[in-house]
Amino acid sequence: MKDISWDAYQTFLAVARHGGLTGAAQASGVSPATVGRRVLDLEQTIGRQLFLRSQTGYRLTADGQALFEQLQAMDAVVRRVETWRQEAHGSAVVRLMAGTWVTWLVCENIQAIWSERDGFRLDMSVSERRATLAHRESDVGVRAVAPEEPHLTSRHAGEVAYAPYRQRNAPDGLATAWLAVSEEDAISPYLRWPHEQAAASIAVVVSRPRSLLDLARAGAGQAVLPCFVGDLDPGLERAGDELKQLRHGQWIVTNSEDRHRREIRTVSERLYRLVKSHADLFAGKRPSRSF
Image 1 (cartoon, rainbow, N blue to C red):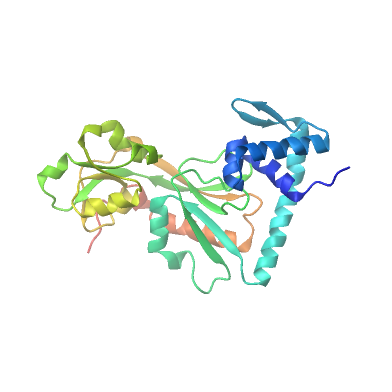
Image 2 (cartoon, helix red, strand yellow):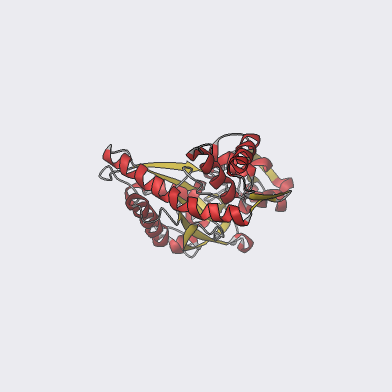
């Protein structure tokens, strides 16, 4: 029987975890066609059908589920060995994936998450897309929805509120001027809000959410921001009430098989404590900061 490489099994795991070729391709950095070909080659080599294919994605067969369960355990062992090897060379890495504003909060409080005394490197990935925590993509993630994937472990870290903000003591003319992220980049509900509720009044469009804060500070108009960002900024004021339809929960997420790795557990716990310490701000309960 032909030997099967670990890479082939990793491709299978990626498809099983993402439920299809597109997500697996994004996680592994190859094309969906290549992923599909590798899965087909694996099935032919093993001599068993591993997936049921449909227009909605790939679903594991009974044989596929059995293989998936075996490989989950192997994958955990491989990663523990890799972590052990990295620690021996002082090169352990923790990958943190979060949205623009949680990343901003982490950067503002980096000593609460990481310091030069820690024996690992912290890699931060900024994305408005949902953290998948696929193999080697990220170790700790922050999500706006509770994860349903069976291989993920999560901790609820409170709620996030949003409101419109503008430059403090801004001229009345700014009351009707809106700032927005371009429609193709408006992934999250709060980014879509100006397009859905005030499209005719949008004055400036940018490609990144972080620029909304800078433009609001500069007096270019009003922007929808998380309350923990807007309420902390002395140069901003609320331009209206909380947009309650945008409120959502927040979860700190890790892979179940990785959550006991010392450095991942450390970052996850520190991140949870940081977010919880700002729980009132996240929930919009403190409308201003004292200076």
